[in-house]
Length: 614
Image (cartoon, one colour):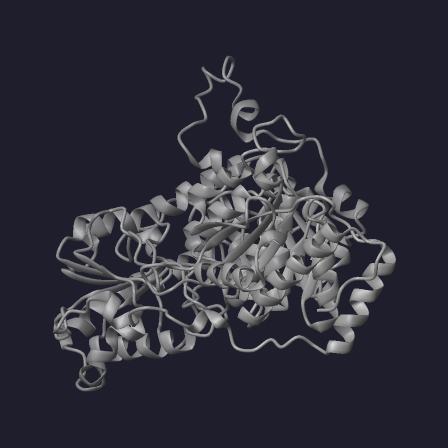
């Protein structure tokens, strides 16, 4: 690059050149999207991002660092490619921690680029100089830092190697090192900012040089052992496919590109073994006709004696959320093998799996593909699968009878929404009640779709911002959330003006944290006089979420009854961002859930008397 015209501080030129070198190297690795938060120390990175925007870098700005990180997390979850977040120094870095925790547990690639003061200012009382390099360490795959005296002190080759190391760590290097968050802490010494004339000269230089080359990701090099080698595959098929068994699929954590091959291989397992498939609501497998997944197991697993005995279980991915399924797996015993998608970290809190392989189902099954393609299921396996399907059919029939649109309840909302959202449109479920209700009450025969929900740390931080990032990646998304989760991220409404997608927010307004009504926390009537349950747990807020949305220019619609949901979804479909609210009664819904679980043990038991709403 040629020198910047005189009149600009040499240090400012060097800082901007270094920032450009870093972002250009990340672009060559595969970086497509960058979320920028305001700040002065991060000025060189901000200007560099703006200069690279005409050459293909998609730049989005954010006021709130926490919201920015969750937006980037949604982008990475949607397409499997790390997005970058740029923040200034100080407490701004601390706001990245909730998203880093979620990215870590859910194996989502994420780049966190934080500007910092030079090392010589640390521990001197200098303003905004903190130990920010330690803030995210416990949740990140790697902490990488620029030269302590400033990024500009590094040679371009060293900066490029720093970028490559960060990218490889974020994208993951096989099952032993899954994708996740990487913290790139970048000191910048003053002076930080170029003058306007110098910026114009640099922009012209970039334009005359043409678009920067962005080729295949450099991170494709040196990925170590193949997935099959890393998994330490068994020399022979560990299961007896001529005896009954069960397949249990947890939330899908693989990338979108590998999902079709995963489904094809799983269908091959099903055709050869005849084993039933119990699929978590976040598995992406419900509704696929070739799999015939069972979704109502959470409602009929309370009585293991009513179920056919099983002594071999193929478990796929993280543990499903259903406590009843977890208890059943613990009591089942026998052979349980766990196959995860590119993640060898322990994913068996029950301690029931004899072995876990992180290479993914496709790679793990390759050595037995010919065996899987031959033969037919044993009659005993087919008989047992028929018993599971009978339980499923009975459960879904009773849910259809009980969860009708005429009565507005959260379980009924989950069931109706699963049917009404157009096929192919993705759904995100907020933590707490929405993801649990979808697991139990959504229609497993509804159109197949990608269902997103972070069950790793299960926080409600950044719910709306995460949904906005997912929508940007998916193109169109429906978010189902409660009122507290939505209020926890009110700055998420600020994405409205920049969103290049369509996001419909379906809000359950039940006056507080409905999840606590489902736990044995609420005291009896005698104790309610001295223990205020709402104040201590539910925490209803006087803020009207619709007013907040309107203040941000977001169109809103309040439903009078659940039967209006279809029309409301059609109204919201062409809008960039829209909010639909349904009011429910959390105490009544908690009682409804309990009654449904008590009354759905199996086809040979009658359901409890219909619940009479007060």
